Image 1 (cartoon, one colour):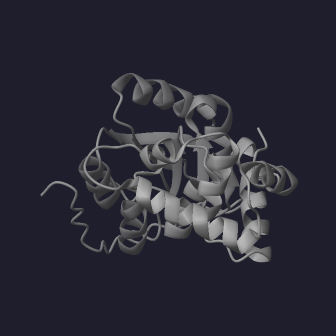
Image 2 (image 1 turned 135 degrees about the vertical axis):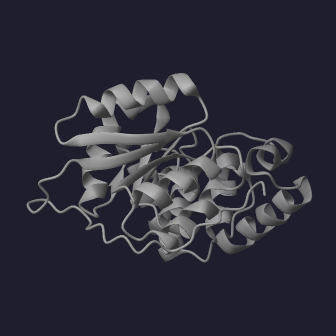
Image 3 (image 1 turned 135 degrees about the horizontal axis):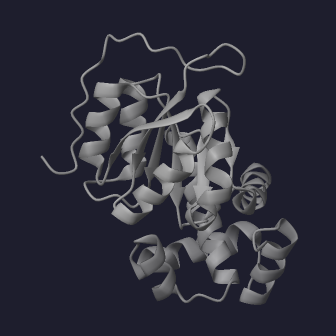
Length: 231
């Protein structure tokens, strides 16, 4: 059934690798819908000492099957895979296969998107265009159960967390605020966030009320102060 992951619990006892205790290679499953990207990433990771790519998949169903049958230490998961929501798949995979730590790859550098991935259970967030630099480090960190965030996203994520802590804005409102400050129209924001323009306008009204601002210029100044527009 498309978009459905049927992962039965596995009784195989595969230990999570640690920094000093694992003598076996870090076993990795790759999931990306572009065959050339999978080959490139496979060569990259197989060239790393102590790392072995044991399987790859082009969709969520294939990724789920490989995780269930191989119980890898790390799953590298493209968040634009066909077959359903990759964000939702993270939580289901973690519930069914807790020995597998998940590193996500995406072109979406939104801090709200990164937060959703971590909330679902991912431990790594890599920007796809910098995968050759970031992925080996992220995989090794994940194998130790540690988080890795692409440095380019980390500053934005910190800014988001500060805003969520200090203000009454929701993560979605922060993302709408950021896009408004970057000059996007409500229609453009709706398209980017898969919302209706009316919903975006509702978020916009709530943002203005909560921050007690009246104009886009004030929103831009607020976003700059908060570091939400950091490159």
